[in-house]
Length: 321
Image (cartoon, rainbow, N blue to C red; front, side, top):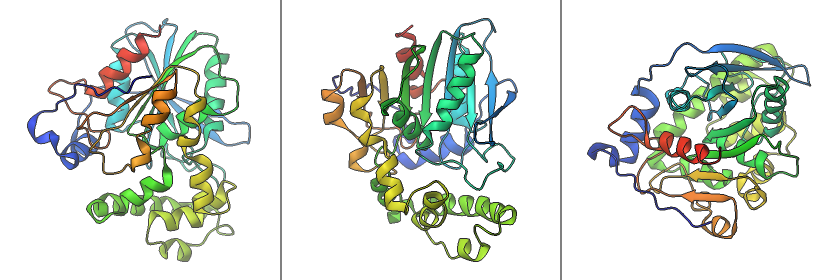
């Protein structure tokens, strides 16, 4: 498919990647009715909480599943903004909270990671069991976008009900993106992620003292250290490098067989060059790559309440209905 340049030009100050990224993540306010929460029991005895949001009509047969980013949850402004955009077009929204991300520690030592596509598969199986939704779309942000793209490109049967997908600010190359976020210009971001994840690990250490110690967690000084200590080993990978190699979406993109839009801003400082898969998109019949010059990381601010990536996602998905 042809690579899409896009026509996104943000209001003046939001041409700065940092301003758009920080404002959208921390200062944006999104008015949305309170989610209705449902707990899904997983096949391994753990659970995932889904937060449901409805448009004007609950009897719609259209559903979009939203997947959040690293250290996120369904209540993040970018999740609520996308939920509102789809609700406005009469779509029901099921916003995933990954394992351990819904204000309650999950039951197992493992939690979530960028390649946990089996969890997404179980959520899809659950919503299909409701026998209510004949048209299902997927929208994933950052780490959740990698999980979504991996799911779509794996050697698995994708339900016919899934009609399209959109990934926003997706680190398709996990190791390369780790290198990008570890650059000095991103020190504040990487440190914030590190402290957030370490806090979650301290809570996990209290529940599973035989598996991980607070001393080893404290010794971590980078995101890679955390992935070496916990993320990789808790989820069946040898080390961080093995985890990045086996779960990066870049290796699954060529096999995607449903219409999928990937929106990665050119000025997103979290992404490496391989997160802009031009050649794969050009050779694919199903993958559309859009690289706006602005937008930072999930920061596509506009002068209206609906952000650029929200309109692009809803327009793209609606075209498949």
